[in-house]
Image (tube, rainbow, N blue to C red):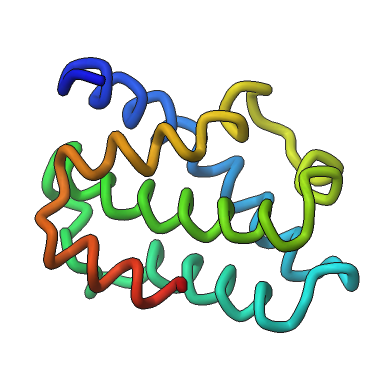
Length: 125
């Protein structure tokens, strides 16, 4: 994947962040989701709304890449543990957005410094 393709994927994902936040909120309320997964989703939501994130949101594009990355790894982890059916039940966004989580993670790595990736990954895994 080249840098332009990665940027395009991230931009598409960023437009879906409101849908992902809605999904994460619904998953936190779902009794079928484990307490550990709910804690991770809660941490991801808190990170997105925190004014103290690693790349401030006022920086165009880059300020949203870290948010996209943390949402993608939190949801990818949940997909692996809770299953696709629970996520699909609560999802209102585009069909391809959920399927592209792994691509988003890989795309974000083009733009995020390794120390930021390490810190964000530690928060989720």
